[in-house]
Image (tube, rainbow, N blue to C red; front, side, top):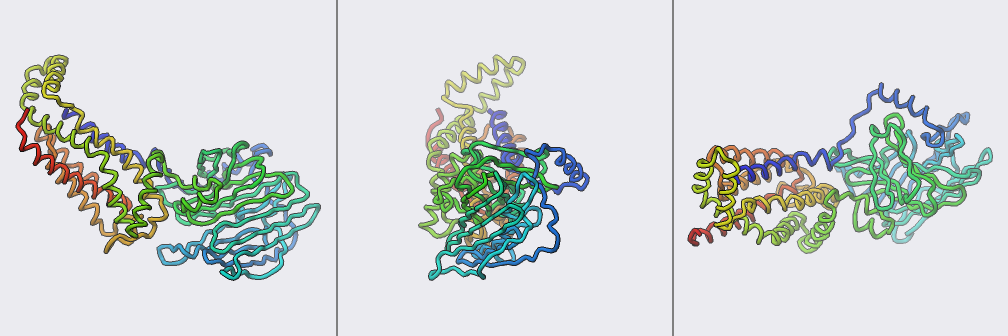
Length: 509
């Protein structure tokens, strides 16, 4: 049992440590200039049918760029005549660490919503004309339209944006003449504010119900998809932008352009309607749109557990109005199904402790005959009705719940900036003073001292390293996750104390 218990604990630690490598995408490192040059050479050799967007030829003269602002209760969007695209969107209700509003913006690699054609003409830098001035939406003016037009050399493009107050969604209607088909891009980083190493950032394509992620360094060749495309997006931890085509999609493509990961869709010429979203990853709101945008919220490998846990967490928040309290209540609720199993495991561990002298005798007597030793030990377990793995099983069964909650507390924008008490001002980030992790480590020590063990004294001293290892691991975990683990430990201590008290009153079998 000692070795099995030790193996189970080591396995738990190993799973926690390696989780980052198997289920969390690291932030790609900047691509060296030498690599960029090589990728550029490779890109030029790609067949034209899947080549990255061709660059617009020089039109002659400078582009007289004009900007127009659209302000609603939720955001301020800046649109530009250059390409008839969105230049930036400032999210009024979300602040960065310095207290300034979050701004999602594109750059000159390829502007968001830029139009391109296979024939080699790029419309991202041509000057569109538009009528009107800055727009301010509100209770008196709930919707507004902005029209950009371009016509030259046999091409005609009319872009109509429709904005709605108190809604992050923007409707776009493109009327394109002179092209059999064309591309619409999501430029580099549009929808990205923070590049967090614990989550993916960059292009995402939803194909059927499969969320497909891309990073620049893994896009040596363009990735192209022609079936089941629902939408494309650029994302970070809490925010994203997306294009949802309302009509036919000929192709979706993600590719590396000089170290930047871009994504675009190809649609037939003529009239096409799109739903554009640039804002927070609010799961319920995204689900209400009905376009499958809620799949941008990545609940991870254990999503089958994470989604209901997230739903329950929000119910408790609606009652308590404090996500810290909601996490505590959720921890208690999640603990309840495991109580009978944990009680059974604790009884099994106590019985193993009681028969430890007899186990030591068998091991000493048959130390040169492993098969006979195992047989005698199994007979001993059977006689005393002991399951040698009974103490390990509850801990192992709780690991999926832990990872599911880890994902929920890591990515849920609802916890971003959510305070708990006193020094915990944001449950989505680490404890600034490391008080919760240290208390959690102390509860692990208490728990170990109270738990019956069949380990030898030397092994028990070695296992005292485990609380130290977990404490250091949890120092950088979100405060909400540490709070969950701390409360779970306190509940374990209470249950162990009750079980120990109960077992001491019972005669050994």
